[in-house]
Image 1: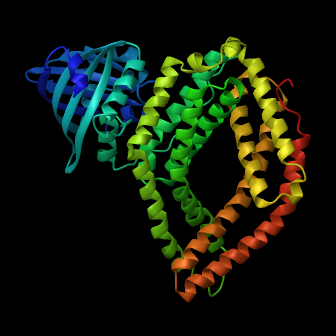
Image 2 (image 1 turned 120 degrees about the horizontal axis):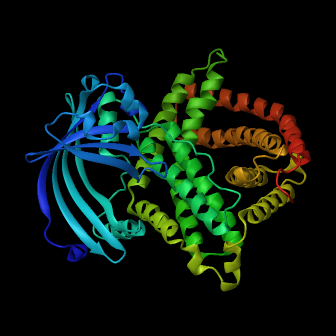
Image 3 (image 1 turned 180 degrees about the vertical axis):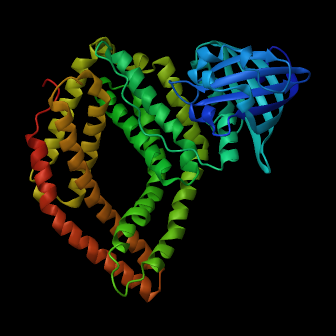
Length: 487
């Protein structure tokens, strides 16, 4: 491949064997740490790694030579690395899993830095369990992180690769403990009152990127919460891109939004079936309605849910999705919005973020109030658009919350907005369920299935009527709630 032209030489080939250690009760794992001893020829190296606070693609690392393929806690300042090591004796550490890898290591000199490229082929072994390894691992030795994203995008031109955010240690623990990676909710906003708009944009997009990347593996593993949190992460990202595009009119951000929208759309069917089968239908089953066999309805929906989950896995593996994920990272590292906004708008980037935030929140709230006029008589399509707009307002409020955390109305405002969103979400679930039931009805011949569909439809019709007045009250209470930002 052309990228190898920047290699210093043909590289080196090594066979690496690494044993990962932990206590019997997995204290290191619970602390977010990994400890391994790796053998390369006659040499042994002990490494401690910790997931860094700024995302799954960055890890803190400490290493030192040791005498054998066994841990030596005195070889590193373990107490300074993490206090957990002050509570652990070396005889408490036991092998958890092993990796055996053939590594072809090449150093590349690229325009913005130096990258170490490791072509790894091998296996993870945990007792009798095995998982194959076949990956290209990139490590930035010099320069800026943008070089990694640029190189990764170049690799996609060579082969349909898929971004892997799980380290070897994470996959090893998953294999050894027989667990799936847990879904990751959005972290607290890192914005500060002294930030400029330019600094705030970078922090916002980086936070959204971290949540997207963290939920790729949970979503692949058929974890309903993983798919849900991946969709939430994409919605949060699209919300940020929405108001940034509105304020800055940056074409690069608009292109990212279009890619995020396509990715999110591919996740929708799986999430809809998850909600219907795990929540909507489960709640109705608790009523123990006589002569209704919900089991057959659940069985009719299961293959359709599996189709949705299969589409999720295909989408995550799609080269277009991976190109989007790398392009997002590159845009953040290069601050792409600085280069493609109109010259007259450049001054906005130097504005205090507090001023920008108030403008964004005020515009979103006014638009929501306008869209919600005559709320009681809104048609489903109009109510759905209002629900989406209120989500944008909620995510934006959460983004900018640290700028106004000391204000008394903050908690009340978010509480009323959240209650309204919950009500609109429940109403939307009913509408979505009708569409899903229609799909089942068209393909199912069983009278029991059709009887169960009728029962669900009737039950939800009752809920819809009963909730209409309550939903209107929530809308009115929200409209009366004072905003927590200066208008």
